[in-house]
Picture 1 (cartoon, rainbow, N blue to C red):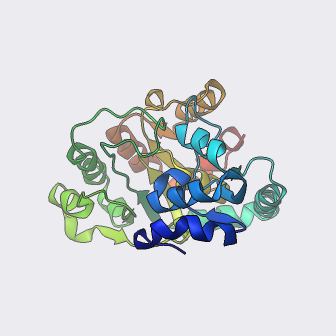
Picture 2: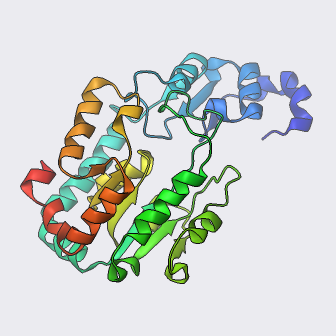
Length: 275
C-alpha cells in the first residue's frame, strides 16, 4: 500500500516487494506507475480489464502495459474459456426457457456514455466533438420518440465516471414527461442488466460484450467507421449493422424499437441472428 506522501521511501521498500499487482491499467495511476518503476517489470503484473485488447489497429495502452509489466490477458486463458463455455452450454441447454423469460421481461436498459477531451483509452476510436451536450440530447430524443407504453420501461444506467458532466440534468432538461424517466445506480453491469429485456448503448465497450455473453437482445447506436477496429473485427460489426443490431443514429433506433419491441425476442433468437 502506498500514498503520495511516502513515494520518496519507495527505493527503500521495493526490496521487500515480491510481486506488485493492480486491477487498474498501469497508465491510469501515477502512484502505481511510479511504484512499478522502482520495483521493475519482472515483479509487476497487470491484467486485462476492458474490451479493446487485440481488437484495434492501435492500442497504446496495451503496448505500454506489455512493455513495462507482465500483462495477463483473457485470450487463451483456460479459466476464462471454461467460464464462457459454461455460460454457452447453460444457455443452449435451457434456451427455450430463456426465450420465454426474455419475452416476459419489460425493462429496456440504456448504458449511457460521455466523451472526454483527453484521450483516455488512446486509439480506442476517433473523437471529434465540442461538447457532450449534443450527445446527451440525442439520447433524450431517443426517449422522446418512443411510444408511451415503451417509455415506461426505459431505464438509464448512470455513468460510473461522468468526467464533470451532469448527464441526468442535461437529459431531463431535454426530455418530455421526464417525471417518468428512471435512472439506475447499479455498481456492476450484471446488476444493471438483470431482468433486462433489451440492452441499448451508444458506445462499444466491455458492457456490450457482457450483454452478448448473457444473450440479451442488443441495440447499439454508433458509427462503426469511427472505431479503429482491425479489418476482421470491423467486418463482424458491419454484419451486425445489416441485421439491425447497430444503428447510425438515434432516430432509426427508436423507430425500430417502437415497431419490434414486443417481438424482439423472436428476432434475437432466430437462427439468422444467433448465427
